[in-house]
Amino acid sequence: MRIDVVSHVDEIKTEELFNKTVIIIDALRTSSTIITAIANGVQMIVPVETIGQAKNLQSQKQEYLLAGDRFFKKISNFHLGNSPLDFVKQQLNGKSIILTTTNGTRAINKALKGEEVLIGSFLNGDKCIEQALHFKKDLVLLCVGERNEFALEDGLAAGFLIDRLMKHYTITFELNDFAKAMYAVYKFHKNGLFETIKTTETARKLIQLGLGEDIHFCSQINLYPICPCVATHEDITIII
Ligand SMILES: O=C(O)[C@H](CS(=O)(=O)O)OP(=O)(O)O
Image (tube, rainbow, N blue to C red):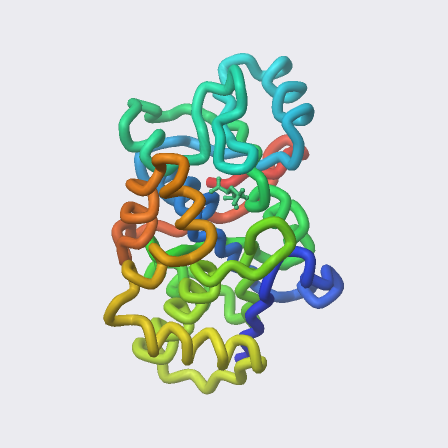
């Protein structure tokens, strides 16, 4: 089995996703928010790229809630932001959410050429790998990054997923060079993972904005034994 890690969303060549299982990794914060939302009872999430698309869809589906951020800040008049804690603190059981985030939802929509698209982070590593292997296809771990650049927290999460594979499965893996690098970086930092994540550029911005609690939450290992996956419902891309 081949495992390719892609460094950020603009590095994806969509033709290279055909017949592969893609894992979207946006540890701070879109992947972590989606996993937390589904684990806490949200029925489905509709990932859209623009605020306009989100509002337009909600005008047709008024029972859906709007969630998302631009540059870490909740979008004005939206019900929820892009913090996983928003989905823990409120009772959202059975709700459908339209989500648009700065980078994460764009990456999800770009990855749709993959055979299967899953959502992974530190919060669900073991379950995510179990689910990905179930499809018996080569894997692409897409580090979403931040504004067209690599983000270390995503690379660490990719290394963590590779570590889970190596530890729990006896299949032979072929890694691309970036995957080898991320695996090595993860192993180097794994005993001080939270301390390292806290120093990343994304984390520093979250701390400046008073959102440091999110970093702690998103750094938890295997908190949720679920793996959200992308599907289609009435011609709309959804995550369940
Ligand atoms: O809301 C977030 O944590 C980030 C904001 S930014 O892109 O780093 O400015 O969005 P995400 O889509 O989760 O990367």
